[in-house]
Length: 233
Ligand SMILES: NC(=O)c1ccc[n+]([C@@H]2O[C@H](COP(=O)([O-])OP(=O)(O)OC[C@H]3O[C@@H](n4cnc5c(N)ncnc54)[C@H](OP(=O)(O)O)[C@@H]3O)[C@@H](O)[C@H]2O)c1
Image (cartoon, rainbow, N blue to C red):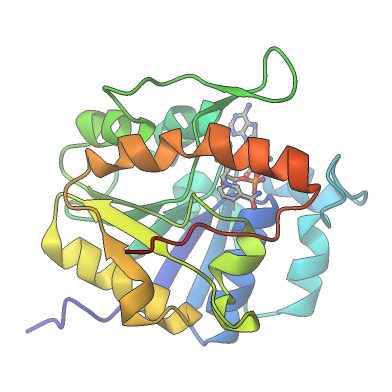
């Protein structure tokens, strides 16, 4: 019988800084990783850092020869987990580009529903009654969305041990097995059991996504992204 907790093949949807950071960590740990993108040639031809100074994906590909870069549709084939790390505005579009998703696929949703159409700071294009994660789940009832890691900057996501106290990471989703699998990934990133806060079913994503306006305000006044949430009693 298949051990449902074991994940070895992962598609990371997203060539941005989050996709690259998570793909780098997973491939370093020995996972079979394929990064998903709209157009492989276009992504590989980008040679300049983006507006935030993040390195183009070709540099990461050059560093790890075992890492693959494929279209979203090809990248998802034979994978046990998809990490959804694309711009929140295009998350639905990206999943459509990916085509039919296998039954019971686990999707770790790291996105934030940020609307940059009026500049910075962005607003949210969702509201307190319906998160982006729930919107995705509603459209794809046969897969298991697990929301996590969206409340912190990418450097902390995969390296909480770089600080004495990294704070908390939240996780929520409707399927217990899927949450367990994602929790194992979080632990492999270095998150202690006591730091992982299970917020219950996927409605927990409303609060996780609504933390972003406050996160962005903190980013503005502090002048850096090097901080995280910590729940104290
Ligand atoms: N930056 C952080 O530290 C951080 C922390 C927590 C959560 N997040 C969230 O994580 C997600 C990824 O953030 P990011 O900064 O790494 O990257 P991003 O710039 O928000 O997204 C990059 C990805 O979005 C895709 N994309 C962009 N425009 C598209 C379009 N018109 N149609 C389809 N796909 C499009 C790109 O596809 P191509 O590969 O084809 O170009 C790329 O893979 C976001 O939802 C963000 O809010 C970010």
